[in-house]
Amino acid sequence: MFIDKKLYWELEEFKEFNLKAIYTTKTFGDVRNEEDRENILKTLKIESKKIYSGYQTHSDNIVVIEKETQEYSEDTDGFLTDRDDVVIFTKYADCLPIYFFDKKSKAYGCVHSGWMGSFKKIGIKAIELLQKRFKSEVDDIVVAFGIGISPKNYEVSKEFYEKFKLQFSDKILENVFSKEGDKYIFDNQEFNYNLMIEFGIKNKNIIKNQLCTFDGDFHSHRREKELSGRNGAYIFIDNYRK
Image (cartoon, rainbow, N blue to C red):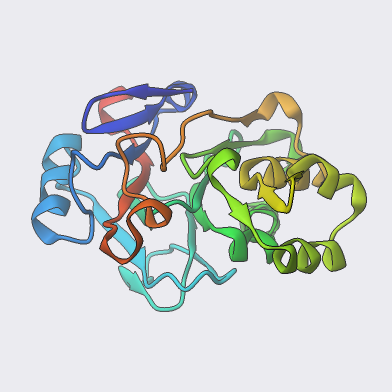
């Protein structure tokens, strides 16, 4: 579960892995602003680390950060690495962050999964990439869902529902879509949860949360439209805990 640290929320369960996984608040600021980004470096004591981020396009593109990898990637919505000098940084305004950790290889990462990323199964592709590049086993992978918009605030169109219906099984759809009159409601976290379970991730290794960007102290595009700022999801090895 996420613990309120005022300027950000921190994922409690990742502490035992010497990982810090956080999600910033609206009070902290807009992470697109350089001044606010500098503040987070100081607050988290990560001035000595390199921040890796990308131009997010709701794609399913994931970069594995290695020694020669550039600190900024075009057309990228996720990162994975096993380096201890790296901070993975992704931006949000209702979409769902999905954090990953492999208990054996110590590889970790985060992907940006709005409905388009979820539709493209970016979370599953991250797991497949962990398997390919870090020899991860399904039983060793821990998945944590970050803070996104809750289903009660996520009304979608019939066309949206039909698009998913063409691609995914009725078993998955019945767990993630509900209908209230003429309205369709979509649960992005539950959708990704079902994909993870179907892929073979153990329920005990999946961490959910009940926070909502629309209702809480977060930037929300659905609430604020074009005036919305961005929340930051950061994940890195916490050298101070070693």
